[in-house]
Length: 337
Image 1 (cartoon, rainbow, N blue to C red):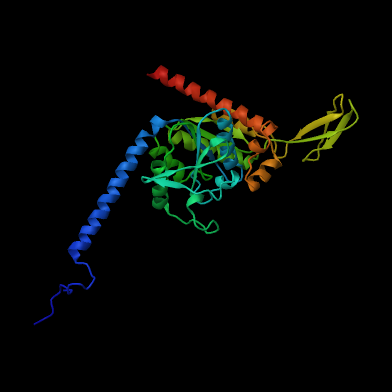
Image 2: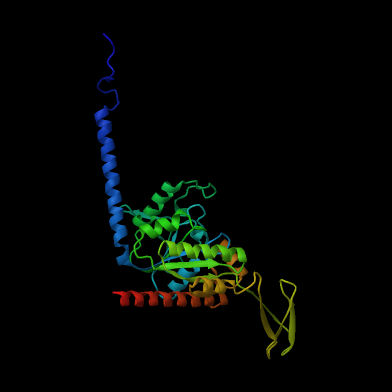
């Protein structure tokens, strides 16, 4: 008699029958579907608990986008607002380093992730918290990235927030598109650039990208706009300084002999010109500040280290301009209704 094609296993052999395996697979599928349903419900309610949601983009890397996103969050928190900071840069999450949170542990309760708490009470979530080896590259294809981002949006317990700042990787890839489609009520995009022509060219692409996905452009921030040097000399005297392009610049000392002069390391005014050209607001400039680099390495942001310094004041001005744009958007919505 030929062998049966169906395998028979004696009782107690430890191997599950096809029926049991199918049942377990169905249970896993049902559990996954239930989790996805819960996630979608939580995402749909995010509009109730988070007042403003602001995306921070840049057309290219190296313009200080994450530094700006972190600075915006800290400046808003200094104004007494409840702020969250979501680091969506999956392949290069640097926000925890900038805020001294590399060793932070995330608390998970009832299937929801509770963010780490940074300076000024800013709530922070980042892929860096979930990586076992920070030196190992994250090589994820689109669908896997999409799933991770949706989990970040739906599985994080933010609580009540006045503003959620979302930091993206440079360029116009899957991440901002996924967030704009998944997260309800995006208020707008802040575009970060530098005065360099290459950066300005890419910032125009970011502006067009935001318009394509129908997300308002709150404005452009020009980072690394100028480097201010200070010194002392004879009172009421003229000081000459050689600029980056070999052009001599002059300034006068005050009655106590103090002087300062700002040098355009990467040109100047390009961000404002690009804003005018593209018909979007210009939010302001941030100085070229070596202290930001040191603070990023040490985990102490410049706003925390020197809260009354020029960089902190520049961030305050930009935040005020962003809030002004958000107020205008609210007024337009009311008129439409």
